[in-house]
Image (cartoon, rainbow, N blue to C red; front, top):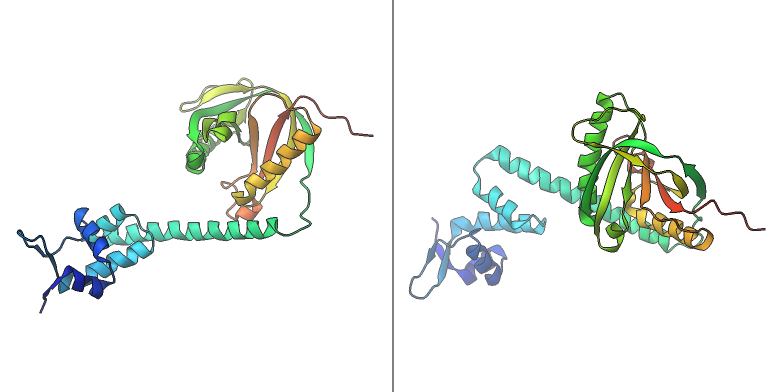
Length: 273
């Protein structure tokens, strides 16, 4: 037989603090079975214990409160399963990212790391299908996933199989929001296509470093290449380019990713001595 208990007793039953229970009541996630209109005292039913423990488990998994509410309130088993599955997949991705960061940190603290090999190259001007947008740095991953999927589909439709890339304006690095132009090289006489624009990228000299593997260490490659350019080259105006030689759309294992970071320079430096 279900019984009513005070909020303090319910706190002991569920290991949820009184403060947390009050908050869940205020946001409509877990309302008490009754509230005394004169004193405001809350009472919970013992039949609510399982729901409270479910909420506690979900919050331990860092599920956002709106998703917790949807999962608790729905009677659709398939919807519950899908919500939980999607959240667990996000947690697995976060765990994999944490492992990558730990591995990177250990490598940074290990002496004798190899220097970055820097190549110099003149890249002629070329035409491309492009998608131009102002992007927040925190959203660059999802933006690239959507945008390059669009460029890839258009390229496949027109029989174009070229190395795609993107340019990043200075504001993207300095202000965490800036212009990003994703591009797919095409023939000079390529016809326009819906959903993209035809753009002309200027030619120029570049110092190029290859980032291999997971994007967790991307900043280290940027740091090494930028330092080399500052020490040995004259920087040219213009955005940094990235060429996605082997991208997430090509392989499943991040260890196989290959990205060329192209830093604009005035000319190829003469070797010293």
